[in-house]
Image 1 (cartoon, rainbow, N blue to C red):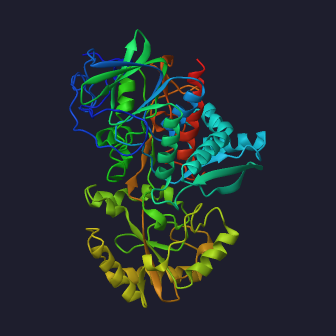
Image 2 (cartoon, helix red, strand yellow; image 1 turned 45 degrees about the vertical axis):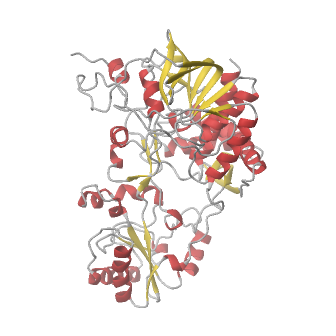
Image 3 (cartoon, rainbow, N blue to C red; image 1 turned 90 degrees about the vertical axis):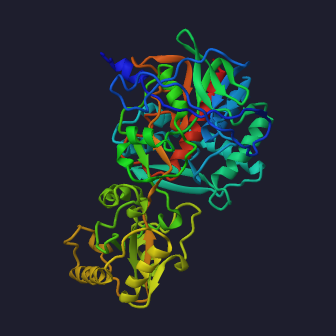
Length: 540
């Protein structure tokens, strides 16, 4: 059987797709999903592709057909933003969601403050992100975020605040190539549900604007009329419902991090890390591929930074691995530490994500030292970001002596059920003593850490901070799009009536890892891409 490049792009999908109940709702309170059912499988195995890549038979029978100008698939940041601007542009809008509520994760939504940043600064920010993304980004998408993000996140913050979820702004300035650009972010970590509290408030406001929401209504296929995407087919308790879209379908269904098979296929170096958001099943992107769209080439950028405030303690004290050994130059952003963890995950056959954990060893005067480092090296040493607080010492493992600290590290791992073999306590003590001796030389002959950060661990009580990001918030690939977020076919041509935003769309990122250098970029990009695309499609 001969398989062409176009066939490879089309023969991709899930062997099963969820089908849940439906209902048109005017508010955004959580609802209960119904049970899921399987779609038909066809073709992938015969083509020599992984078994999960199987397209279903086209659905042609519907229990109901509903007419709209625009159908938005997904009620996260990008979907809510798209629905808002589409409705504001005069369109009749439906928003379908696979689960029973609007849903987001995270904390911060970043923008370029264009009231302060000049053209050179905008271009410097874009150039910086191109570098961080290994020059695989579509530059026009980065530029669209930089130019429109401040308007978009300001709308989001104002709307959420009116609904009772008020942001605590985080402003900063950066320089690249001698040009300054100013960043502004909404932050919600002070709220119980963080950014999701804001999303629920925004959802209620968007519903009040006239957008019709259909929760527990997963999109299982796109409806085509000739080469044009003309609607979305959603599975409901009553049967399949066709939501027709006269102007266009905007896919805002998020990434595929909750689907292990897709994750392994599109980002294989995530093996062993745990899933954070199972509801992000990638179904929307699969429906897009079955309709002729193409995915961003492998390897997709990965986002690994779960672990709370202790993960964000970016202070270059001594780091010890699960064997009590120093294993790195500690001046490394936590967003990239996951790349050092694969050998440890492999030791546990990639079945225990706790193997990606480690301990930062600190002396009693860690705050004083950290403040000195932050004053002289603010880009490399951070107590926290935005409104995230410095963690308190009651979150640390403590020991009055190094021997007691070593014993308490093992006790902590056992109590927290890491299921990691106990560490030789003598090895922990020796590693700390060896590091102190290395600091005394004034140079790091082991990993090349800057001499300014070679500070010994010599004043007790001593602390061990359990750290390490071992969960996956998102896989950053998605369908390829042009500068209008319009999806492209296998020949690079726009597919009429079909758009993708947020993490359902690709080419915004491109590096091995998600760049944490612009805090809140993921949420800010999602809000902005939806915001500009809803407005654009409404204008067609």
